[in-house]
Amino acid sequence: MGLFVTRADGRIDTLIRLGKPALIKTLNLDPNFARYIKENSPTTIVVGRIVLGQLDLTADPIPLAREAAGKLLEVALEPTRFQYYDAWEAYNEPVADTVDKMKRLADFEAERARLLADQGVRSVVGNFAAGHPPLELWEHFAPALDAARRYHGYLGVHEYSAPVMQWGFGALQSTAGVDEGDEGWLTIRYRKAYRQYLGPMGYGDLPLLITECGVDGTVGNRPGPLEAKGWRDFESYWVSNGLRDDTPGVYMDQLIWYDSELHKDDYVKGAAIFAAGASQGWEAFEILGRTIELLTQYLMVHPPA
Image (cartoon, helix red, strand yellow):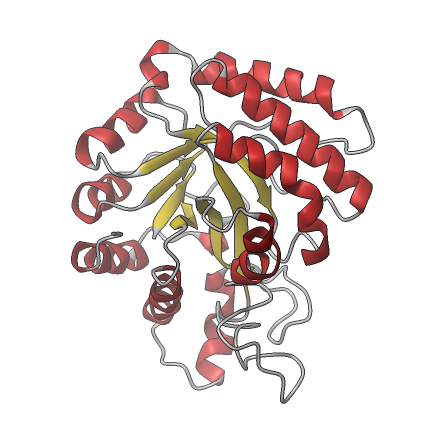
């Protein structure tokens, strides 16, 4: 387990120093923060992201890749930052829901990864939203997967569910009597992709980063209060459904379950919980407080490897 960090906080520093998380993804591009991570937890994978807007998947992807690579390299190649980041994302949660869009995204990511690699910078390709892409479209993402392998990068996906992280996994389904075994439609969905598509395509060992994860009420076809978003919004629902009256502890139980599943797949290299230091509008996802204290304690006795 690891963190998605959007601003600095001493409690995050403590987790890094004591817990040695597997992954830190950050919008906080202060090179001092990245240096702190590597000096205190050298094995932590550090992924950077800048805000690029929305990707137009109806346009020619090659000029868009060159434009995005230029913006990323301006940041990634800054001398005080270059040595501390392991890889960089491009667009967040691109919606590639047709064959044509997936092919354009694949060409975009392949070219972007190549351009960054020419300058010694690695990439995380994909960064799909929870429940995406449609599984049958993975075969059309092959150029990007090939580039990730060739240039020593990663595949990135997001995995959220609600009202608990286990919803959609195994027998916890909307349709009674359905059991997905050790796979899920939202969390642990990556196993479906690797087993049914990436493995047969020859990418079964491609390193995977869960670049965002947690409880997110915006996923569809779920029980619980419709207006709920982050894990904090589900407190009364959890209690009314028999979970103990300890919201941070209940959420930590879900994160521990998720971590135990991730450890079963060697190709999974880290998962970033959203969010530590949440920005305005995302307070319901904030784990600073008792949750990050519990997470720190957990990581101290359950190292990533």
